[in-house]
Length: 442
Image 1 (cartoon, rainbow, N blue to C red):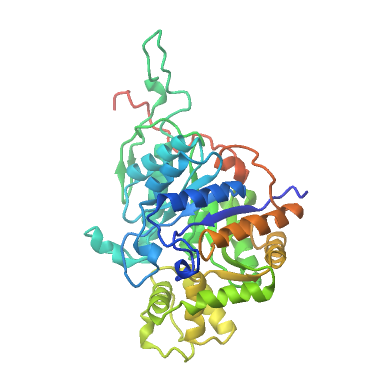
Image 2: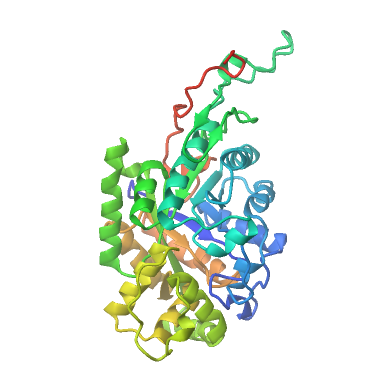
């Protein structure tokens, strides 16, 4: 067995990652059903997955993907899953543009305690401008959002470090509950935030919850190199993925980090069949549910431009990178140019996997491709995006995971109980908060 093992996450949307996956026979049709999500989590844990991941958004569009519009608040949902899982990492998105560092730090520290050390925070800047109206704010431009995010992450990590590991004494004989000398103020004052601290919860079991990042822009990549433990990437081409992987890993040494301190997991939608023809037939059924309204809405969101103004059977227009998500737009426009796609081709691709990579074939076909990407410097694992639940995810866990195990590429049992154990990450030292004891005079 190889020493290097693949990491696997599952990106959960209750109605499936395909824009119309909920219409597939036998598919779940709700992202507001706790039993549905609990069943997915049980399957992920049975498949020895590193992580279950829930994205989030802060606005609703009835024409968008149904799970983007109707869903639980993700940290609340993960707290419920913490009680019904034992090893599975639990990751969720929370915004640095429309959140507060203290609230985010407290929520994910709480989740880490509730789950016994399995929490992960996906720090996003929120690309969609529609959220601004729900918070009474203007939507900051891309560059400013990343400046805010960088400081936001520093504050959150500082708050997580305000408590030393042994600060809680709970000594019944002396009556001392907390050693105040081991609880520290943060006293952060920066361009965007002023936060005194300390956090009102003890140090997390992982020391710090895992940090996820998914930005593909220049500031997003730099922020990932500086702060992230996991990166979710958008890919369509092997050579491009290898180049992006190498470029990101090359940024880490300037922050005193080794390449293996950060794992890159491209998003991939597997559509499986006992034969290639059967897999293709499944994909054809799913694509048959695509409508102009749901696909064009998704494509417009990804490209940051209203695409309804362009002819569907014409070429994909030359568009600048939007002020929303650079990663999806750059990857999709590059594929369109490379393959001379029409706009209809591109919107069909977007409907299938929301701009992510689609793999259609037998379990062996899919394992072959994942192995190639993993062993040739394009990925450290994959974020699996089943087109619908539960059937498509069951297919992956029951057929592809055993194939990867036979090849020595994936674990046969969990080696620890915390998410950092699964990812091969050390528990971080307490170094982001050096403030004086909280009980000391200012």
